[in-house]
Length: 109
Length: 112
Image (tube, rainbow over all chains, first blue to last red; front, side):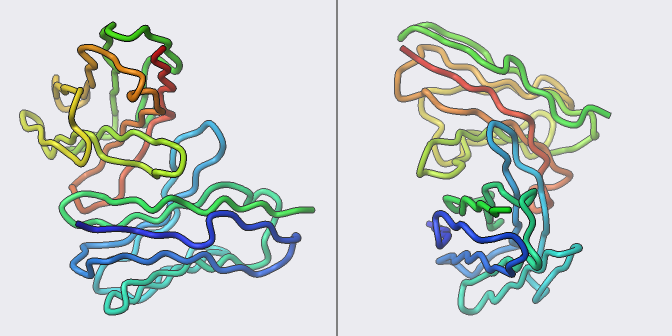
C-alpha cells in the first residue's frame, strides 16, 4: 500500500526566505506526483504536476523536483510572501491518488 | 465556468440519519472522485468513477454509496450516519485517472 509522508508538518518563516517542503513515498510505481495548495476552509488547488518520466517542473516562484528511485519530491518556494501561507499537500498517482498529511506554512511579514 | 460545485456547504446530522452530498462539474471530465479529509489523516479516497456508468471503491468506502448520475454529476450517500463520518468531504474531477484533479470547495459534515 502506498504511503506518503510530508515533513515538516508545520513551518513558520519570515517573509523573503527561500524554503523547501519535503514529500516521500514508499512505492516508486507512480504515474505522476502533484503538489496542491489548500487555504483554510477551502478546496485544493493544483500547483504543479510532475510526470513519472520528468525530474522537475517550475511555475513562477515554485519549483518541484521528483526522484522516483529514492521516493522523494521537494517543493521549493523562492522569496516567500505572506500570501504563500497555506497548507501544501503532495499526492502520488498510482491506481488512485494518495495524499500526504500536508505541511502547514506560515510566512510572517 | 463554475468548475466543481458541491452542495451543501455545511450539514449537521444526528446519528442514524441519511443524506446525499451532491457534486457537479462543468469541465467535461471523465473521472470524478469523493474524498474525506480528517485532521492528521490527509485526504482519503472514498469512491471514484473513472467514466460515466462506472464506480469503484477507494480506500475508505464503508458506510457510503455513490451514484454517477451522468457525466456531470456524482453523488455520495450516507445511509445511516455515524459520528465517525464527521469530516470535510471533497469532490474532484479530472480528464483521466492519472491527470491532475480539480477540487470543489468541500462540505463540512458533523454527525452528532
